[in-house]
Image (cartoon, helix red, strand yellow):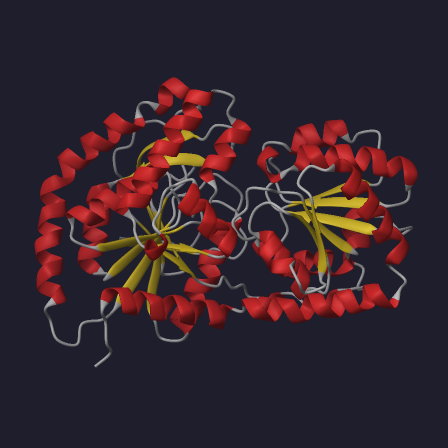
Length: 465
């Protein structure tokens, strides 16, 4: 691997907080493919071909790791794999935060992903994020900024020879995820998974063909069988795994998620961030959405609600922070409403300021397993409005730090938005902001990282000498 001091290996704009420290050698890759159900059929033969071609290397890795396992004073190492790691999303951001924290406390944790197709080769970022060169990739249906990708198994084998791991946790139930799971099984590595993506829910919402829904459900069930135990963040998704994906209760573990709370604080409120970004002066309540600008996040429903709400409260403001394929549609649908704003991707003090300046955080998604952005809003002292479907409701329930509204019930959302406007100046609202900050402290990085690490050691039977 070669050293690198800049991002010349990526044609995308620089990504906030990510620094290339070295690069993989150039490798053969099939040209990136556009989306399509027929093209998606290429994934299975590509996967089979790569396994067969790299089988000798994976079997040699198995022999090597077996010898390493028997060594005294061996280092307990854990790696997380997510094929979306080279993108800007909640999964990637949270994994980078948790892994960075683990490493700061002396734990040997690393991240493995697949380099985005804009990269001319695989790279290592911040010395512990290994983005393997891709062998095959195609645009995911409904996401121009997301890929279905298969990494080079040969480079994976070399990486694990250099940095042997005791356990691999797969974060995404995708083609890349099951590819890595198969490779790890062949190499004799313990494999588990973390159910971070409601893949079946996404497909039902984005893809009209029902046969694809059935195919994906079958695929996810296979994935769940080969990556047990499965970690979930809340009771809601434990029930989904049991009822929809037929995972036995004994193979499900509920572990807390955590975020870098120090990055968000109510003290950012009133510093002028909202005014500086959107060039507006506050005239009424401010509502904020942060996340991927995509259909499965419930944004079409939020549009419907806001169109009617704006007629009754024309001075209320709605802002979107993030990017995605649905952004241009959103702008077109809101072109007549001057109090709807778009911040694009933001990070650092700008994002913290937007959270704090908002009066309410709005998250209409019904497919999120947790909701990092919900916790970030609470940490900023901003109450959150979420649905009664998915994981975010478990963050809000019984803590008086926001509202849980019926999924896609426009009347309930309009009524609550109206109450929000009227209630900003009340003591009840002030108490809600205080409760939001308090509730966020249940999701610290140390609680999450320590709980995960103890779980890893337990299932691997590892005891520190």
